[in-house]
Length: 399
Image (cartoon, one colour):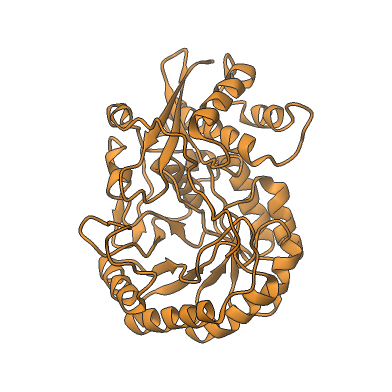
């Protein structure tokens, strides 16, 4: 069996864009007709530039190859151009292709991917969601802003708990910019503390609080903030400082009782090794559409297991990466939490022929072969994205 063809889809994510402005999906097709889907999580270039990158890697390394030779493909792409370095853009492209290969392999042997990676460990996967605006249309511009009103945030958190969620993530500590890290303002510290207080009062012991910063702060600033939040017992403090220097993040970890989580901006086992070696975090949040794919993420999960660290796969893109996260989580003993976009409903369900199964706060792993999901190409083509914006953007001036 050989890989014969490639399709790509840049899909506009309708307003309110939960998960980003667009999703980059791809499909690999074998000579025997088996198809596999993948997703590229890459925000460093415009989506149509990324498509050209996908086509280049496909033509040089994937076309005409055996889909089961995933390790060989990975090494060849990782080392292309005499690099052997964790390149976030290249790894995003490789991740999407690698995920599609696993989908093909599972379909070829009529097994879910998790059965090829050690087998099912978890019958169901505990999920969490970010706080999102409380309006019927989920209008993030004109609707009530849960990040400016702690009482509204608490109300929405309680509604999520009523739906079945047992963990809620939120980041009320302010915007992030290309000029970070910085010291948090007193207003940001006091506001963050108030958010934790109100949400904890609303959910009691029914849900964990996940404090989700985005690398805004210096180590000293993050420590100041963490100490104000400890009374509300968050399950984690996410990416308290930028991701480049795990030894600096470790300073935060040593000074707070809140577990540190990180990983959405990291790629490959090599970057995660430094996180574990320095003690920077005890919860690893690999994004499978960026980290290097399913097998690379499984290796990282194994590394984490040896350090008694846990995994909580990250998701802020489309449901194909989400499906890959589910496969990894199902077969990983040290799985902690799975990120989703609310209840995996809305456009994340519409873009699939059959939505991911979410039930009262948990995802039920699929029993279908491969990833267990199929992209609805009709919906994908009807939502084609033609703009040049990046998936996510930062403030371009100091805050």
